[in-house]
Length: 600
Image (cartoon, rainbow, N blue to C red):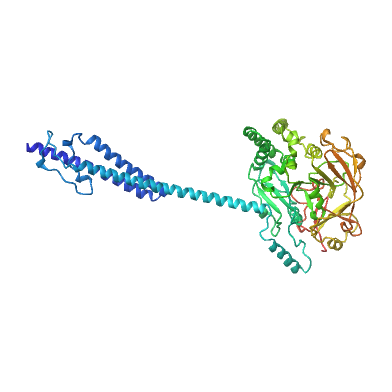
């Protein structure tokens, strides 16, 4: 009987060793994973520890259920080999079983339950710690998001032209005047207290490449800075270009460069117009896709959507009293000298013409709108911009692909100008008053010698008759003092009463569909009439110009801006027609290029 008992004791030792080995291995793996987790994030370390703790608990439960005998007499005696605290060993006085196994104390089961409870408690603590880390990570992400939104709000503030310190700006102007020993070229009030105009200039580059802005851009920026009293200019583009790319020292606080990133122009146009039109998501995707294709093929197409700029760029224009569109092939003068308070207050839309009074339409070089809903939604009354937007884009894409398949590089484009449908719809919109004022200059001569040259001096733009001798630059400088009249009285005065007239569809605007033409042939050649439009009625208002608009004995006349429409077609795109020594806000502009002024 002794031998079987020794055999049973040997079996108990085997069971003890096996259990000890099992638990030891689990503990070793657990510690190894814990130390390895130090090289990872705290969350990874916790997951490793929880995993090994779970394995340990599972093995103990399986051992209890399947390894140990199911009867009380067959309990395993070797408790002390798997616990850190002594457990009463087997007692031979209590007798053995039929199999010769040694009986154990009844505390073994309670010890297992105690250890299982400890493991459960440990797992709970780990779960709580992991939950705290997850919450902390969420807080970090929230803080990061809030910081990002704060940065965007600061950038938006800069885009909206909110000055950090108007008093500092005025002090800087006074300091500059003191240094130069004369009057500053800026006004003491850097911004008008009642009105602010946002002018949009989207610029696309052929083939969707990074922004490649025109060689005359520095001259545009420098001259645009002199309109800071009333106007902020937004140059929207795709790709790496910003104010830092401008020549050193050239800065205009009212000129903003907004990078929409690659494909962003089409995405912004398509998304905002589709939202305004309440189109389904599928239609929006199709519109964006085709706009992106067409903008890359023909960047000028962005101008077709000028009437919708108030909706498209509302994110930037929301806090402005007025928004408008212009072109970048212009040189600006003292624009604020020519904008009248009555134009901003009494008219919903104002556009500046170059004297072609017989053609009644909104000019692409300068058209500004009151920033109100009934004006911003006029574009929806044009079919190709609203119900027919997607169809028109399909037609454009199909036409382009057909022409390219035929091997044609130059072909007629499907371009529906804002000067057509939009002008007609605006003129017939109830509650909308429009003024067409003669305040811009334009270069139209290409094949023959021009009769005028343009001089930009001290922020003022002068068009002077070409003669053998240059005009008196000293006289032009003397007449180029900055315009700081916050009353905005303008440079024109009405004469008499406005007279009503009827329009026809013949005699003007041959580039637009006949149904949208509004012509007044009896006014052809008139240089002293502005036009007033209201709800389908048309009036001509004669005006006179104040003396301060002329210089050098009437040889030179000051204007709001000059449009290089045809002149620039004579220039080389490389910029060889631009004198590298010319100052950006003091130069001469002719049909042959931009030249430096000497003697000032």
